[in-house]
Length: 172
Image (cartoon, rainbow, N blue to C red; front, side, top):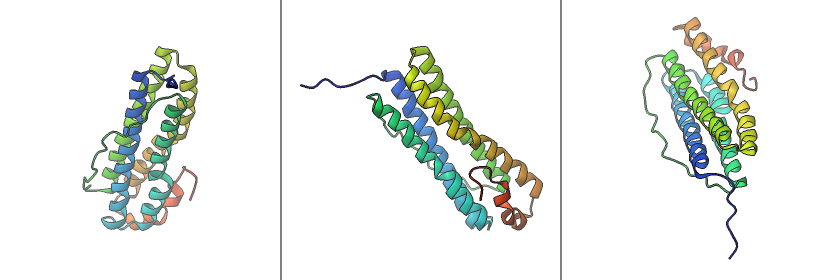
């Protein structure tokens, strides 16, 4: 019988699974907001850009976390994801909800990084830290959308027309 390669402590593997859960939850919130931008607030340009350059990134980053687990003999388990069906009164409310989801992702990254430090898991820490750098601009992007939604107020058509100017994630 071939021994199972297991270099990843169970507690750290569990923490990485929680990190993946938070990333998929952020994707669910983003997809709900994309729907609302398109169909409730009639902001098709904003909806498309947010979907392509923002929402799609979360599952990809979760896949990177899973790859780290696999490389260290851990098992990625996709935990239950929220059903994001909240209807928002304003575009600003959408982005505030998104910020909450991104802050949860950020917190989960730091929990995993702290656990790597506590367990002296240097290799995993390097992977997670590099992956964290991919998500880091999402907080600033979301905060920018909050500020811009406050600036544009009820002028949703103008906000939509200029939405690409608010993109810092890969440009328009």
